[in-house]
Length: 286
Image (cartoon, rainbow, N blue to C red; front, side):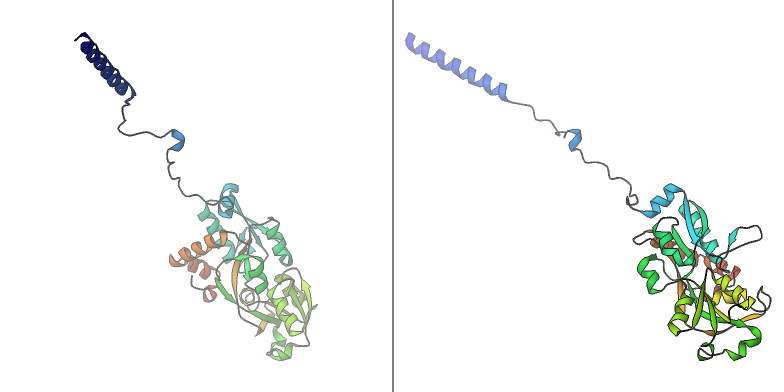
């Protein structure tokens, strides 16, 4: 009987030990397990321009540097020496939309791509024809103005030069690197490159060249009755073309300018600016 009591006592003690061990190994499960701080999902940041964004770079710098030449009615100086014109005024408005100032730098037109790629300027905005050469070397905006290359001759000789063939024996002055130079070169005309279209006009006025080839928009503003070159006139149109603005290849500034053009055309400010400089008929809808 004693042995039986000892056995029961031992069994009871063993049961208690096992029960206590089970309780000791049991852990309380939290209502919601928290991840370490490093594993917590980060808040989604506001979208920012890419690290290589030229829009962001210009905004950080605070200035948009625009390469131009003296080219009325697109870019020229007023009586106080300030740059004005359709392109100049639109460049000022675009810079303002980016929250930056604008700086105009007069460049050698023949070196415009070098000036751009060396980062001496941020864009070329000067009645620039969208030639294959330009579009392959720059990131270009949408076309915004129609244009043509026209022959400029003394008004008293205009009746002699009303066809392309009639102009074949003339000695031309043309802006180096311009669409005008490309046209006379393609026609096989004799020509002398000069620094700017305004210089080409001076060559004809001085009698050192028989004729010039310049942009039709410039011709409308610069030659004929009521202008500084009243004794010159334009006769033959050599082509038709379109203007655009050029940035460095891959630059997001071109897309930003396209958006600006679309908004400015829609609200009428682009048309109003064109009317101020007499180029509204050449303006292309955006």
